[in-house]
Image (cartoon, rainbow, N blue to C red; front, side, top):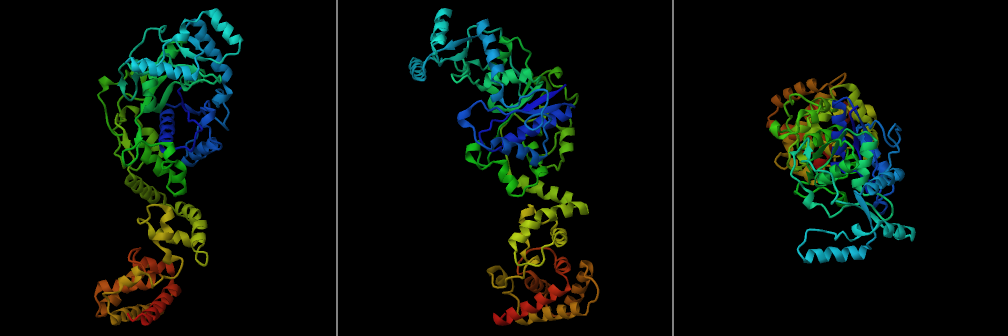
Length: 517
């Protein structure tokens, strides 16, 4: 069975790059009819952040990315915390030591630093002089019995024949062994494994068939393939995902704290829109198939689908259906906030095509509206749903509603600079004539107010008055909202209702008298 894994370290909140990696694992697993695992790589106790695992799980749940097995969802591959799998890593370390593919190194950190500096001064690319490789078995055993601390290194002088690494996204790769440290460390002095050993052991033991991870691990691929060879294991298929960049071109990083998924959750972005945005960042090209791995190394396709455009509105099920790893660009990708705004707006509009969708969003907004307007008597879920209907097409983010249209919940403030600037070009006579005519027409109206009826009525009144159409509508917008932008006057009047609309027309005239409009 196809089995993938998302393996974050609990060193902080999940960031957008991590969420995209989890998303691609989800898409690829579901596309191939497989499953995926959440594995927590917590072997570096010095960088562990309390609460990070709960934060990662919460972010995945918010995004709707349900892993099949992992913390809180037991399965046949556990335990799912690497700190609980130490015996397994020690067993594989012994295999490497016994076969001569690894050796113990007793050099102190200070000695290792001195050795690196000495090698660098001579112009050598080596990072270690292999001093401990030449210790006899008796010497190693004696020092272990004496309790001396040691690390375990891979012996890169004794490796099986190397093959050209291949990647589903990047195709055939050049040999990158020269960039690796000399005899890389596999087991640290605290008896915890490095990422290299732990990931190889866990991917094999868990039966992982495909490894989708960030491009930053691409230079380590030759080392990992060496470990598979030394242990006589069949490696999974690898796909490395191009790095995401901030708008200024800098690399996204947990340490910057500006790309945390939690921030996007708090700011009210729709999870479907965020996933859509992340999925399409760098997805949209077709490479020369001759430069890609053979079909046997990517079982997801025969002929690729047409890659989607970077702002195509797509649901999670649509992403699964159309996803192609071979359509990912090799370039690093800038996350454009404007594209998220576009996608978020249209995902909201799509969800508002049903009454259930509008009601669900009104319920989400309920507490926010009550907190923003604590004295308002117009904060019911039903009323907020009316406001959403009136604002459709204007809302980019649901949390924008209080800022976009406070006039639906509280009376306008006619003293603001914006409100006063609206009527500077309108004569006091035209202002009052407009409001008097519309008030009289509303007062004579019986029954409910519908926006199309109100629109007809306003058109009739405007045609009777010797007032410019622009001034007529601006005067009404000023009286009803005190803001330059918003829904149409008929829509605003319908939501406010007859009584509140007439009260505002009256109040704005009084405010006008006091400020000598």
